[in-house]
Length: 262
Image (cartoon, rainbow, N blue to C red; front, side, top):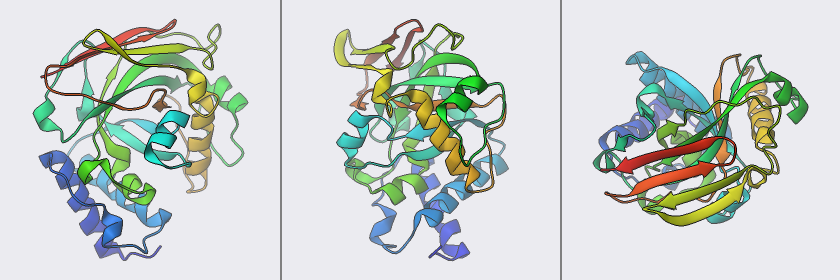
């Protein structure tokens, strides 16, 4: 690590305040160009600690920048990992206040809940398959705190991978009988199709992202507990939304997820 503890605490407060106050900031590596990956995740961990100290709970873990489309869009080739908190959840079909966000975008996600713990190193897709309790659809609303969505990988990790809101669908399916690689997704905004993709857009198989998450946590002496909700990453590229937009995402075999931005 390159940053001292006081700097990590200060940057965590800086980024979380930007999230909670819906104001943008410049990427933190502009002022701290020497910070490393451990620093970035340490800042994210401190943001998590701050939320938990206020009584918020971690609702799940998330994998970011895992779709080939998203990686191309953001100019990166390495996934990132973060978390979503309970207050970020919104009901399927409900409203999301655009004014509480900076420049939100939506992306479709194939999600799982585990029934057994997963731990790296050496976690692979087969181990993840055996640990999946059920599969469900979701839409994540990402909202980078960085001005004009301009950031590098270390800055976005520190910013908890742009987490802001998420909506989970009501359909739960066993993994058996589903092929997550070919599972199709269609995103519509105001009735117009904006993106189409299949699960294979996420690293060839969405569960690959979960294995990578387990290995990432394993390297830090942590594991994915049983009963964990995991967002495997955006299947589609992220699409900008504006006040008044109605978003509906149809998932093959998993129903649909919708919301309105007000």
